[in-house]
Image (cartoon, rainbow, N blue to C red):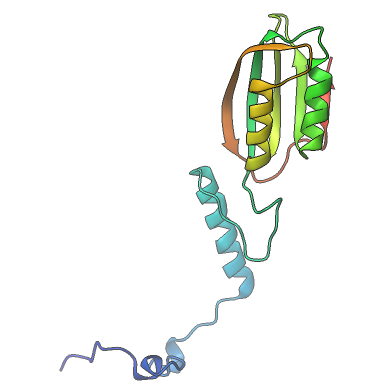
Length: 156
């Protein structure tokens, strides 16, 4: 005789699954469940997915990202680094900025993705008052689980 494969009667009525024998029920420790959720979030973030635990408000729930940048144009000798540091701090970002031997400015931004996007737009279109930006390159963007810097620094 085949077993009844229908819906468990107690579940159909909105109750607990009493049709499962007590010996088959196992309690999974909360710590194991949380560890599993953490692993799932870490895995999804490597795929570029964002996940947010309920009740967490990590800067509007944004995924943390890191991105490298290089800015081309008249960006040295016009206080570009100082204005970049100030704008980054204003947005709550961390990272660094420095002049290069090629006459460009390069650095790294880290923070919530929406804030990083705002800083990228600022780097592409505004910069310091006396600068002239020809182009901005952004690369090595990746999701990060925690910030790697504590402040936004000018590297000399």
